[in-house]
Image 1: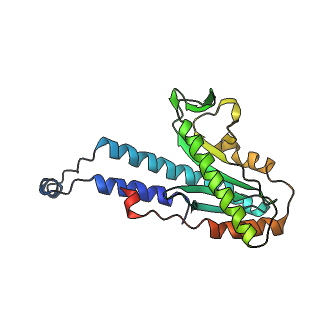
Image 2: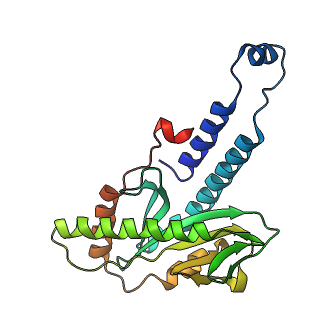
Image 3: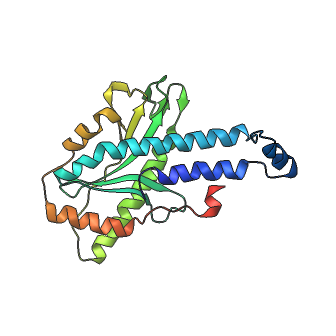
Length: 225
């Protein structure tokens, strides 16, 4: 599955579920009148579309790193989390892991830390940090356990990162509760500082195990409503 596809599918599913299907709706459609979709569903669909676009933009930025010894997995399920996915799971040339959460937020407000919480302008997005931390913990535990089962006891560093498109990021980037938030324009430069000492065998091993631990993300029908 390519980057952003599940978010696009989620938007399509929201719109399908919200579209009226009764006799009156069919009559209006036959007369050429568009179906009225509730504002809440439209907002959810727009947010999913924005998420998909952010994932695609981020994937396009990081894909060239493959020539520098990086490995990337896109739109993957997270073990033990029913409806969560990791946008981009990167393995650095050293074997260190950087899960990247892509965000595309409007440019009118700055993204900044306020009293230990993430804000976009005056809106509190503290739950984003909590979700990223929980997802990172699940991925770290699952990856380390899978490596141990294969006889690898070497520790793996897992550092979560949020790539922010459009919205300006305070200070050019900051770390909040262990999660690094950077402007998307600086993402590749930041990642290169996190590459570590190259260890091609170990990086390939971690990537191969991760590809089995994090299967391609597929929403169940019930998750799309």
